[in-house]
Length: 105
Image (cartoon, rainbow, N blue to C red; front, side, top):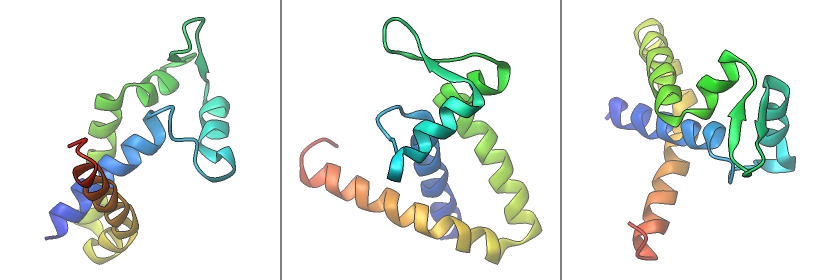
């Protein structure tokens, strides 16, 4: 069960960080993207100005890095890792259910 929680949390955090449609409360995620060097190009597509920013723009790359961090955290402190992941996993579950109810999944 813990692995499902962590997988859902990684998916949710990856979407929060890497998806430009996710601005977050008070546009915090947009502000974070700007600070690390993520900008919109002339076609309104996100691009990274540096290597770190390019890694955040690539959703597939970001999910690998988050997965590695989650695996290390889980090996070091499983209960804390699951406790931190739980809100993101619950959010992901709600989004998946909403998408299924609206026929998007």
